[in-house]
Image: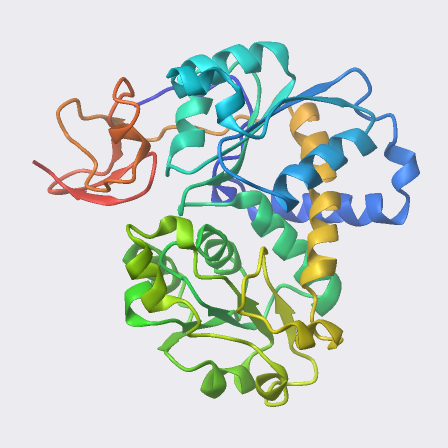
Length: 362
């Protein structure tokens, strides 16, 4: 069994209690009410931002959050301009940056990469998205949006539409909302982009009803929240596979006319063509406001993680299986081969600690 690690990290939101999330939401609400009161809260603190793949909202909202708190920023937004381009591994890059910074934010295209970085980092690490796996701060953004706009996180019927297979925002949101009473889900996708089995298991374990459908037209009328996602070109093995999937789901005025007057539309952005521009003027379209909420929740998160030095959460709960390989070809353990092969569970089926993929014992 691995020991507790010294730093407070945010890799998976579900590593923390719902009460911890709610404290963050309350703090974000307070910051929104009086931002100037927090202008010097992080004076003298440095945040390192390591973005191994493109980002607009997540990167800029983190940077703006730290600047509004009075802190400063170091880092890169293109690995080609860092020593990563020379072949430096994640451990060495993050070990160095974590020695310069008080807190570190990392986005990477490979599942489990941020947990891998946190294993040896010397400061708290925040997961800003690891491949198609998780995106906990987007989920905090979504929770704050729902709380502010719907008034409660309980009793909502949430429709998720698009790339449910590779959508890390979808995975994180479902795992979070399954912790609230009365939540039900409508999963809208093609069979090829259906939700992974391990996320469906979360819903089943929590007793949350869900439907899998292929038609947005048929589903939109029953929803309190519609969470649209783009078909993610960068997650496909070939352009041909992407072309087969794009354009299946487009939200327009006609579909919105079938929705409840109280339904709200969220989207983690960027959008491509899945929400028509005409929908932007609908008062139920919340995605631009949602992005602004993201800055406030990240301000609350940075403050909390820098303050709560006594809160310890296990980074690893399983044990090393030296000769066992993760069955997920997109797992970080296949790229960074020096990493210990940590797995949870016993018997013939194990779960990878980095990407959560189920793996048969070899």
